[in-house]
Amino acid sequence: SLAGALRVASAAFTVDVAAVLLRSADGAALRVRASVGLAQTEGAEIAIGDGFAGRIAATGRAARVDDLDDEVVVSPLLQANGVRSLIGAPMYARGRLTGVVCVGSRHRRSFAGDEEQLLGLIADRLGMIIDNAQLYERALAAVTSRDVLMGIVSHDLRTPLSSIGLALELMPADDRQLGPAVAIIKRSWAVMVRLVDDLRDLGAIEAGHLTIAARREDAGELLRAAVEGAE
Image 1 (spheres, rainbow, N blue to C red):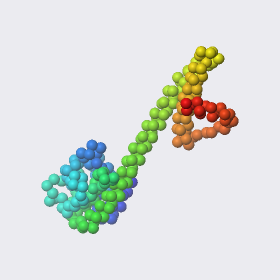
Image 2: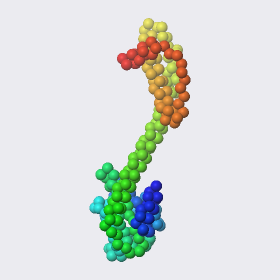
Image 3: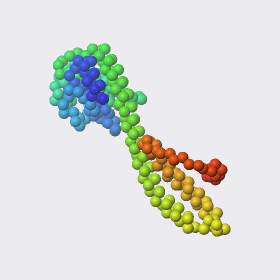
Image 4: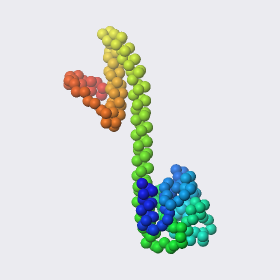
């Protein structure tokens, strides 16, 4: 988890607080996604270009501040939590800014250049992890939407197809004029029924509930149906 990664980073830097801020969907702000040692972070948002983290996001470069008392503009969140020294780095994935990671101390300290490089490496890894998680969430949402749509389509189509099937049974298949048309309608109806069944089977396969019923079929009839369906 992000909180677990931040705890490891806090221990590595021997600091009191750490936070990951993600870029908002509109790209105009940063929002706190996870933090360690910080209070009152719920709903915290920083405009890109404002404050310590906002400037890192705007410039795309790591930064450090030995004493926030020397800063002209300081985030109310940092002030409320008594943060004194801070270092941060931008997180990127696929060439796109995903957010900023920061670690800080409630006591004045000077962060070294190698610590800035280390945080940059951590930011790179976190950026890829977060991007992969977001891609997975979007893919999962797309699969869920597809499954819902498939369920609705298969259910809504089954009722009219049943009515069509019953009506076809009443139509004269041996009539010279209507017979050929009835045969075409029956084949088309059978194709639609199979498509609906395939939709249901796909859902069952993904849920791990597919059952297979073996039966004998006329190979010649199957080939004829395949050829007719392709024509």
